[in-house]
Image (cartoon, rainbow, N blue to C red):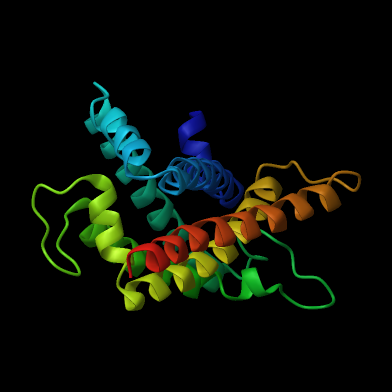
Length: 217
């Protein structure tokens, strides 16, 4: 049996694949947020960053790879969720303690579904420039500012940032455990890192939305 067959046939293999996908997405979320922090330095810096990305020779390949990563994560999440319901495993990631499931683990399905819906809206906002109003020929900064100048969208993005932080915090902790990195000595540190990461994501993305709402609203 090949390594690939082993990964997808057995529960532990699927969890390890999910763990790798989760780590990649956590890395992307942090990198994407870091790049978006250039809005605090003004339109020129942010547009230069956008132009740099779009002019990369492999930009289309990166976009396709990122889309494939999201789709694979969603599909694997659904597969594991169905498996959990039918085979009564302990769950994809964090073992339940005597105190019960954490907020992140107990809301993982909800936050995952919510984020899929958010991603659709986000693509319509920023990638395709359709919502809230069609924009043609505008710069990256102007498109982003046009969306977040609308208080309704800005609040939506702040709420979504908090939900994303919760989802990714639990996802990061889950990935650590699924990949076998937890042990008695390091587990407390990894849990703290996961919580801190979630707060950084929630606060960082929220700050971007609030800044542009206040500046351009």
